[in-house]
Amino acid sequence: MPTTLTDLDTVRELEPVAERHLEEHLRKAKAWHPQDYVPWDDCRNSAAMSGVDWEPGQSELSEVARTAMVTNLLTEDNLPSYHREISESFSLDGVWGTWVGCWTAAENRHAIVMCDYLVVARAVDPVTLEQVRMAHMTTGVAKPVKGQQFLRSGAYVTQQELATRLSHRNTGAACNEPIAERMLQRIADDEKLQMIFSRNLSAAALDLTPNQTLRAFTDIVTLFQIPGLTQPNFRRNAVVLAEYGICDLRQHLDGVLRPVLRAWNVFERTDLSDDGERARDEIAAYFDELTLRATCFEEQRDRAAAGHAERAGVAP
Image (cartoon, rainbow, N blue to C red; front, side, top):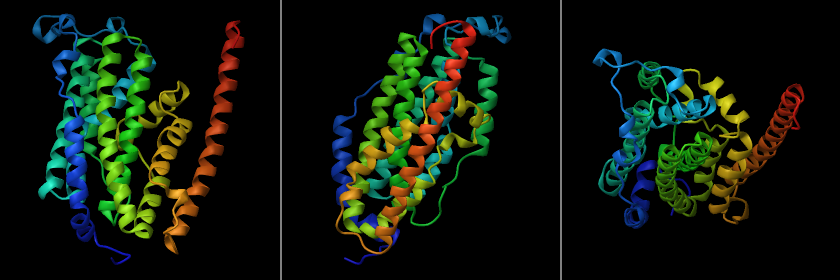
């Protein structure tokens, strides 16, 4: 087997692996229906339908929970761009087309149930939600790194699905509302299964062409960007989510990167040489940098919390 493969060669070589893991994925996936996670009894007409428009007092969610829910929804919702990118990377032939279709349908269901919940439960301003949703979908997303799209996409989807799973679970807890928590846990379960498929496929790619694959992985790990980056007010909202423990650097390092690279056996591999070893060294250096940044952020967050508590006259 040559040490460097084209995307087409890799797709062909890994097709039997994909068939096996897709069969396992479909066997484990549980059917569910968005309407079972939406409080339809709370539904009311808007003023345009002789009802009452949304007001902040109608929401049972905190500001942090609303911010997290909208951020998660917009991340799920930009499906046309995601479908284009993933279909170009994986192909739509044979098992790859089946997987892309399954993934797209699942992501669409996530967006549907979250949007229905937010509007029906009057958790957020539906007008503002539609405005930011349309702005985000109009902007779309694009591949963060060009070249070797099959290998890079496998690594990216693995990280993204695991990061999204953590964000959904933490958002559900922040909502402090049983229907929202149950809905987001259901979505998180889907994300986990999708992550496992991509993680297993990437592991097989590492065994097939270790140096080339690890270089692709390193590019994605060190340049990782969540697909919601182009949504309105993302950076400001990301700060809020980090401050309240929904999604922060420590969680990304310990809850996403370390488990993924451990599953890929990156730091214990003995089949690397040249660029593969350099790529592994780059990941190790990046981990050191991210650990330092995470520690600094946590210290700043703790100091800010202590200051707020002191001003409020309560123990931190």
